[in-house]
Amino acid sequence: WMEGLAGDGNGEISGTAEEGLWYSVQTLQSLLWMCNVYEEVWEGILASVKGGGELGGNPYVVSFAVVVLLKLSRIPDALVLVGPLLPASRMLSFAMTHCGTSPVCWKAYIDHLVATNNRPLLTLMLSKLATTLPLESFVKVLPPNGNTRFFLPFITAAIDTHKTTLLQDSILNDS
Image (cartoon, one colour):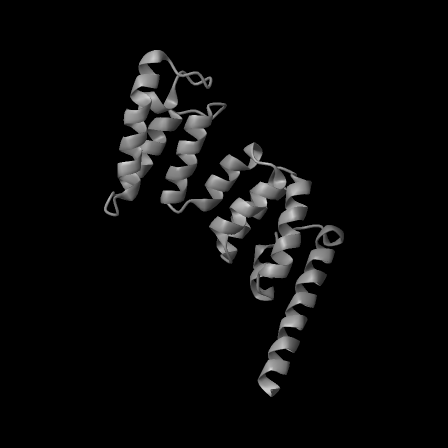
């Protein structure tokens, strides 16, 4: 059933594979709803989809791999895979939905953005994180060898947000 999902690797699905696509989707849907599918099964499925190579231009394969990675709680890997396919604003929404306030998840993805020099998306992500993550978590997300001139505005925004939260809490507790 995996061949029906993968097609020919170029985004084209052959007639035989297209006929089996609905069967593949139903099988995948059944697996996704099962709570007791072992992690090894998902890892095997992911390895089978990758076929030893990169997940390239086939949107079915990329979508499938993202779902499997999310099922495996490998959220940073899913973000890396889907990042080039989404506009920055949608990527921010996708990342916020799946990473939430987890500094571990954000750190892995921020490190990837720094390593790939994706400055526009990095700027967007850090701007949002500076105002949504607790200050302690935000500091953990930053790379240890980052450029102070680049990161300082985000750190300042995180400190300002933290001070505002403390002031609001103080006012509410005094009432």
